[in-house]
Length: 153
Ligand code: THU
Image (spheres, rainbow, N blue to C red):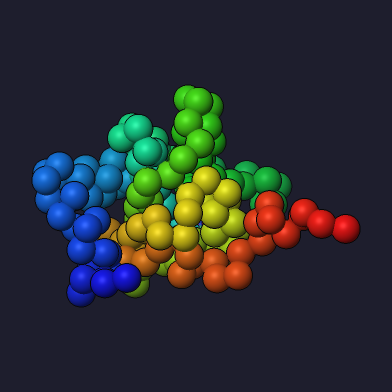
C-alpha cells in the first residue's frame, strides 16, 4: 500500500481533507480530556480521542489509583466510552501526553485497540508541544493474538 510521508495511505489523506479538520478535531478532543486525567502518582497526564466508524468521537484519560495496578490508561477509557455507546469499530485513534516525544501506547492498550480496529487503522501519537508520530494498530502490535488463533483442535 502506498504511504504518504505522514504515514497514512493516500486514500486516507484524501478522505480526511474532504472531511475537513478531522485530525485537528481529534487532537483538540484528546488535548481537552487530558486535562481531566487523574494522575497524582505518576504526574503523567494522557488524553485519548477515538473516532468510530460512525464518525462519532469518544474520549478518555488515564485514571490512577492509590492501589497502583488499579489505574487505567487513557486509551482504555476512550474504548470503554465507545463500547458503552454501542459501538465496536475504530476508525482512527489519537493519543496525547506531556512527554518529550510521542509516547506509544502500553502493551495492554495495543491489544485493546486491536480488539476493535483492523491493522490499517491510523494511530497518531502526540506531544503537548505539537510533535506527532503517525502509525497504525498493525504496526503497534505485529503478530497480534486474535480470535482466529482460538479455532481448531
Ligand atoms: N498511560 C496512558 O494512559 N496511556 C499510555 O499510552 C501510556 C501510559 C498512563 C498510565 C499511567 O497513569 C501513566 O500514564 C504513567 O504510566
